[in-house]
Length: 195
Image 1 (tube, rainbow, N blue to C red):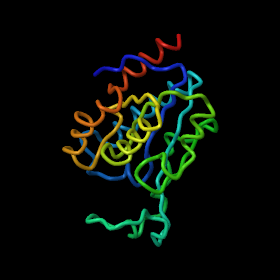
Image 2: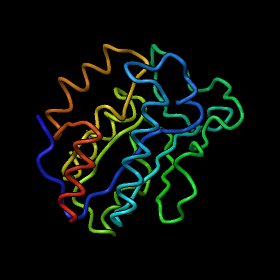
Image 3: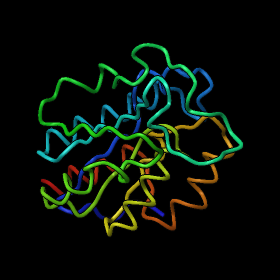
Image 4: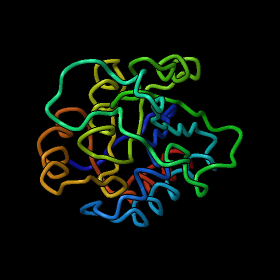
């Protein structure tokens, strides 16, 4: 489905575009540089239109004491992280009007003030992008949908650590949560809507 509408009060939510996630050389189908360039284009357009940009970052205590509890078959979050892995990349920072949300789990809503920040600004729709498609972005999209926001997903401004999980999210999950489209489509629609 193509992007058809952007509400007058739409926010851009960029998920986990930080040193650690973008430093992963195995990102697919888009490279970190491609995702960052498109996310930057979206952010510049939203800022120029006076619309909120939300920069979401994930972090954990070094000892893993604040990691989400529960038994998992996958890797534990209690491993050590390199210094600065959780810092939002420089290319997106330096805008005091941006909202920064820190999370400690996959999605950007649970355990954060994201919903409060959006509702205080009268936001009715979110455009999502980031890393990883099937983890942070999908979890945030599901929660945004459950919170009653209209959801748009910039599918070329997100990437994953596995091509199949990216494809599954984009082709099977996202169309059930909102509208999907390319960065250029979203930017053109935003420019047209706000003209």
